[in-house]
Image (cartoon, rainbow, N blue to C red):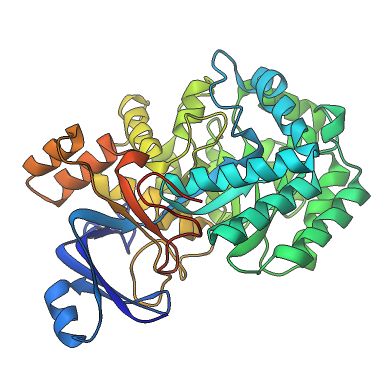
Length: 438
């Protein structure tokens, strides 16, 4: 791949804006020097162009280049479960999500769903995602293959459960161990794929199944881990009944050594102060899913408590309990929820961009690979260019400073304003431009 200069207005957060006041970098006439799919330089266009007069220029002036979005909690089998209103978590699973997940037993249906899922991620500007796979090995493999074909960065794994779901979604512990090892051998570390050990949640995973998770993590290097925690009061009460020895929900996962760097727990709405402190000490990350938390009536996330404790928090779309794909809408919902939550935070545009990009990279131990435009990282970016005459175009024309511009993008942005997506410097396979991919 030859070198290229991408010229545009650039936003990124190479530092944590919850800790540093100057974390947002804004370059009005900016440039990315990309070589072999990696950022070689990020800075003012004039200086980079003078230093590299031989480089072709991809001129994207008139729009905005942001790092590719990183979705840290999304379920690939649930793409057709979106829109299931009027439920809380456990009856939503029973009535809406799990019947669709059971359909993944059909390899043809699972393959078509996987391709649709990957297209939807790319259309929304997501270049990296931590994905709950399926309860079926063939379906999870179909997701990995669709991701490899497209070129998107996916972290995923076989979903493990052996109780309290539909019987066809249960596995025996020995079978789960064998199938997981086969998927790890085939896909982990290939292309841009990584494997995550993925019990659905403690409610549906016996101690024997959690021991399988522990074994997988101890036997393979650099695996990630993800599951749910503290999402719903009924869920929490049932976990307490099933694990009477555990002092709280987190203690179930602690006993089996499942926490630590590279572990991402989704939701954590109703965590105690002690659980939050222990999560911080373990360096486990939290995926905050504001739309799902609201639509399922689960509750208000205690972001201030998590941030003050030092927990890395990133965003997840939680398809299909949420409101669809894309982190622009999740960032806006995170802002809105925090404005009304007790002890909420007034999130800045810089903090929202960080939650949508670099924070996800940190949660997944990929901060040296993606999440911002620091030289050496993969050239993963989205190009946002609203159509002339649109509402967002008019608002942006009157925006006076970097924070106002970014706030307008976060408030009014949608997949329709995403003109181009690049992963490692190239458009994902089959990408055809605005709002379309594969």
